[in-house]
Length: 130
Image (cartoon, rainbow, N blue to C red; front, side, top):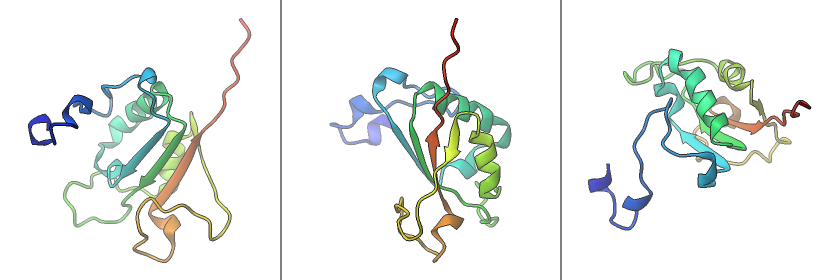
């Protein structure tokens, strides 16, 4: 990846996996954008991904998720969006927007933007007194 990248981008690139993202909370990410990524993650690794997103301190997650593109061989986790909501539910909740005000992660290819796009926001979990 590094040798194909523009030289000025190389210092910022790191290779890793969904269960060991090579960044930390101190790297300053508050939003994660995953466009056509989640459906490529094996189902048994989705919990690890959720833990990594939580570990990084991500506040917002914007995703475009394929839910029915069975003809694509790399799409191995084709699940309805509520399934994804439940898998991210420990640390995140789906963020709903008023009608007509949904931000566009990518131009909608269908009139119902909610069928492919989803926005989640971190749930504030109170710290237990010790």
